Length: 192
Image 1: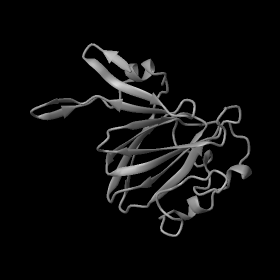
Image 2: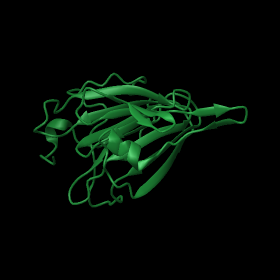
Image 3: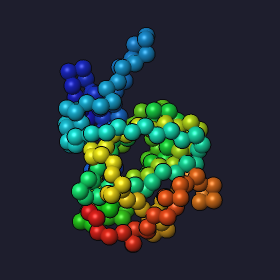
């Protein structure tokens, strides 16, 4: 937990993959509604996040069951992500691609929603994907390096060796052609 002059600003909870954090910023409420610092470099540094985020993206998915991922960027432009749901809900997935990690090839899942107000930090070397759980879901995320087609990579979303239990069947999932044709973990070079 991070403490500021106003009290607790952000709770940080590590997931079972090293470096991946769930972040829950406080909402300061009054009769008008609320104020929340969803991004504060000092508070993030206090929980061990020191990335300089250079770009923010906004995604909208109309239908539940929309799969995006599993994505990552490699050298010379690897990118960490800081993601939150601003409308709707997602089943969020991270997969550790760092060969020297004790959790290489393992995955972790969590539900993120506009209601639970939880963000996720995904460090470099970890693939990320999601499945929308509600219609009209919107996500924003910051990245620590600019997107580049030369370093953009992916991992097959339903690789049986990883065995992610997605909330939608392969037949019902709405997946881009690009994400359907990504390599399996066993086919990836050693990027990290």
